[in-house]
Length: 159
Image (cartoon, rainbow, N blue to C red; front, side, top):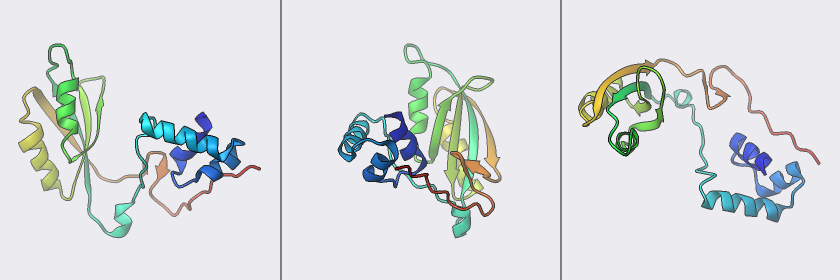
């Protein structure tokens, strides 16, 4: 079963029939496993990674370290939820070290990201401090190399 998820994680476009061929399982069994995983949120979503720079689209990414005051009975969860619900937030993590949360934010301009940090994030009750790191260039993301001319690799098919 783990093999099905590994295949889908690398390429969500692979059909249940192709997965069945790769794993030796029946197509019906693969479809059933995928449907169950979608229902119980083992598979959270299917997405496409776009290299916006190739399309000439400006996108500013910033990694923001956030120090927060944990709350009674809920710890960091309540403030983390308030933060990750902002549409500008692409990812949010509880981390160890000098700060409590690492938040990946995107915007169209540096000014837009800065405005989010100063006007919305830093003013939240419980936020004690932030440090913003603007990401200057993405080389690799989610295991995919974004620079250079590397061609798409197809998954091996075994029969």
